[in-house]
Every structure is written in structure tokens, then in C-alpha cells.
Image (cartoon, rainbow, N blue to C red; front, side, top):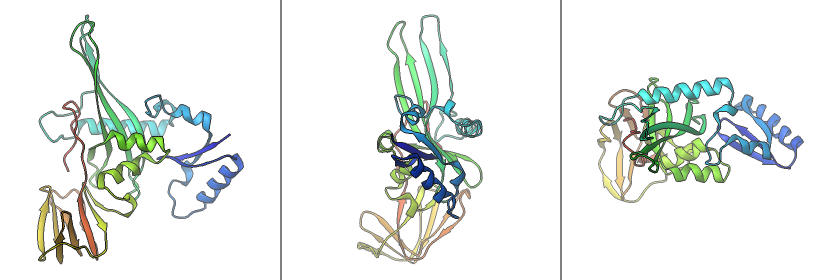
Length: 277
């Protein structure tokens, strides 16, 4: 029999011995720099599989009352947050007439955990709308996926992510939240200096066109000052200093060469629009 060790983010280790699993947990609990130590769980593999449904969604009913409340509050706050266009808040619920015509909008949980850098709670969810336009017709189902969390000023963000990144992480038994964050920035998230939807990724001295020192603005909200720039299709900055024009994120400074990356966003359906950074 195999045993699965999990924390907030999902599977972190597997072994064929319960005693080995418990020894692994004790070792991690003694690690002074590990803030998930109190949340490890050892579960027989056949029981763990019941924590997700046939589509890969996490069963909220299997989570603790505290986690379930925190996640529900985060989703509800994201539903009311400012969107990028006029579509406004997500409208959860359903409305069907006597002939079965109407719509239903719901959400499912696919992952949750703590940010590697800020330790803030994050969640990966699916927002799903089912629509039947004709009596006795088929349901048309559309899905969008988001990484949810709170910014430094406690405002909520909903960043649209690719479903393939989520399901690939589930298939390999990996941590969902870091996998999604690494997909967003195209790099190992543990090595990233994040500034909202923008990231600094350390690199060796890059090749490319030399650009003099100065400032530039990306995405209309991130102002970058650097001692020098290089451009080879990607943008690099030497000793960058990044500030957020709206003032949501604190300034970030770094020494050395960094690639400047704007986080990827996948397309979304009109019923589930993302927030703006």
C-alpha cells in the first residue's frame, strides 16, 4: 500500500510505508523555515483519491471548517472585485424557466496553498457556466480557471490561467498553486521576484541590443528604472527598481541582470472576467 503526504498545496511526498511517511513528517516539522509543518497529513492512497472528484476538483466537504470558510470568503470577495471591463462581478447561482431554459454559474476548487514568498492564501478555481437556450435542448458548458489571492493592500485578484497547467499538475501529483504560478511567469516561481502581474527572473549577462539607462512603463502600471537594458526579443534590466503606479504593490529592487516578464493570461468567457492589476 502507498501512503500520500499532503499539505495545503497538494501531494508533497509518497512512500510505501506508514512509518516512513510519519518519519518524513517529523523531520519536516523540525525544519525551522517550513511554515506548513502543522498541516501535513498522511493518508492511504485509496482514501486520498476520494479527495478529488472525477474531473479533478477538490471536494470542499473533505476540507476542515476553517479552510472551507477561508476559501469560500476568498471566492466571494473575488466575485465582487473590479473586473477589466463592463461585465462586472461574477454572478453565481441559477435561473431556469418551466421549460428548462436558463443558466447556472458555479465554481469548483482545484488547488489551494500559501504563496512561497508572501505566505498569503491562494486558491485555484474553475468558474463554470451551463446554459440551455431551447426547451429540452443540450446544456452548453463553458469554463474559465483562475488563480485567486489578495494583494498587499488586501484587495483581491483573479488571474486567468490555462487549464492544461492545472490538470498536468494533478496528473503528476504536483503542487497546483506553484505549478500555476510557474506557468504564469514561465519560470520556477521559487526563483522569481514578483511585482503583481510582473516578475523579475535572475539571469546571467544577456546578449541583445543595448538600451541606455532610463525608465519605462509596462502594462500601464509598472514603472521600471534600471542602469541598463538589453533586448533580444525578451527585455532584461540591470539593477532594476520597480514601482507600481496605482500604489498597490511595494517597490522591488534587485542587483544584477534580470529578465522582465509580464505574467501570461489565458482567454476567459464573458461571464467570468479577470481583475486588472
